[in-house]
Structure formats: C-alpha cells, structure tokens
Image (tube, rainbow, N blue to C red; front, top):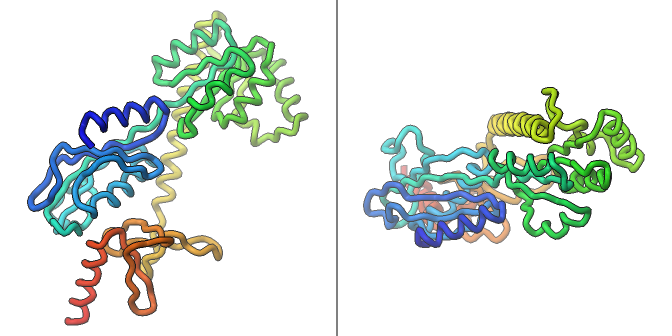
Length: 327
C-alpha cells in the first residue's frame, strides 16, 4: 500500500467513524526486507491493508494494533533477533522471518470521535451542534421523529454515543427511547425537574428498568445558572466533557485490572472460564494469539499441541526443541 492509498483508506474509515491503527516502519537493519516509511492500515476487525515486510510481521502488528485500539495508546514494536539490542521503551518480539534483520514499527491508534445525537430543531440544539463540533464530536442533528433511520448507515457502532433531547415537549418520549435504544452513554433531557421525573416514571411504566435508564439525565447540564440557549448549551457540553472523562477513567481502570492476570505457563492455550473449550492458543515463541480452528502451523509434542502464527515461529520452536534434546 502506497502512502497515498493508506491516507485515502484512513480518511474513509475516519469518515465512517471506524477505529483503525496506522503502522509505519520507522527503522530497519539488514537483511530485513522492510522499507522505512512503508505504511499499513489495521482495522479494528483485523483487516490489514498494506505491506510492512516478511510474513512474521503482520501477525505481530495485528495483535499490537488490537491492543492499541483497546487502550488508545501508541506503541513502538521491535522485531529483533536479540531483545537486548532493542530500545527500552519498545515492545519486543523475536524476529522469526526468514530474511532476519531488525524492524521497528510505530503504531498509532485512531479512535472514532464520539457521536453527539441532537434530537429536536431548537436553539439549544443548534448552539450545541456548533460547540460540539469544536469540542471534537461528530454531530448529527435529528430534527424529526424518523430522521435517525435515514442516518443509521452513517452511525458507527464503534463510536461512543451521547444524546441530547431538545424537542420542546413535542416528541420527547420517542426521542428518549430512541436514544436509549441507540446505546447512548448519556441521554440529556432538556426539561424541567418535574417533567424529567414524569418522563422517568413513564419509561418505567413502559417496562424500562432502572439499569437501562442509567444514562438518562434530566434536567440536562451542570447547574451553572444557565438561562439563554447558548448558556444551556455550555452547561450541557460541560456535563458531556465530565462524563467522557469518567468513561475514560473507568476504561483505563478496567484495562489495568485485566492486565494483572497471565496465561498458564504449562500450555500455550490461554485459561478460560467454565468448561467452554478454548478458541485461541498462544504462540510459544512470540506470544501471539492464534485461532485454533483452521490453524495452519501446529506441532504435536509430548501429548500437547502447539500453535504458531507463522512458519518462522514454528521452525524456531523446532530448533529449540532439537537443541534441548542434544544438550
């Protein structure tokens, strides 16, 4: 993939609100076949567009791209025959490509901008639309009850959604239910405290439970004494920023907690809960997750089956086994 085609693919994914990572070769040492400056685009579903070098590189980049999209942090990957020669701030994998050499790849996660759904053609909606775009949201104004259906193809499931209902009492029940069904993490209702309480009671009567109504906030906005439409919009945007920061903090806490565990050292199949059979195994050479079903590179040894991401890792494993036997 040339730089131009990589940039076009990235622009297309950004417009669709899809997450992806940009992988760039930033350094190489012979005899690697990689080229400095070469780029690839890795989509959240594993789609890989481009070429970075030998066959051993792509599985590693896929794995680390998935991690980068999960935690939102860029990273430097180094594939080297000797980990001691790598930079201390890099994530190091053994070089198993036949060509050998060393390759350094920089991964940049590109997460979709949060989507702000504005229900109702009102002064507050228009003020929020302008401010929301400046704050980095992808804004969609839904000015009539069936307008979201026309925009559904443009709404990515990967974008975190926030919604504000400013329908002036016209179709607010329909708008709130639509925003909740859309998976919005925040549904701000512009209404009086009395109307907000009434709305919650009506939703409960319609069989919505308390957990499902957790995103609903009414009246919307922080209490800053706002009166004019622009002031109300500022108070709501401030609340959105606050909510987004809370979500980011909780996500980082979950990632940190999940990172405390480690796979079993006795097998290259990760531990699973319950009796459900595992669907992936860990490559014992590079640590990559390898789908068990349809795996191309496997090796049976001492009543165990080992799975590998590529032929290079399998060959290195076999060489190590041979050395262990000889010694």
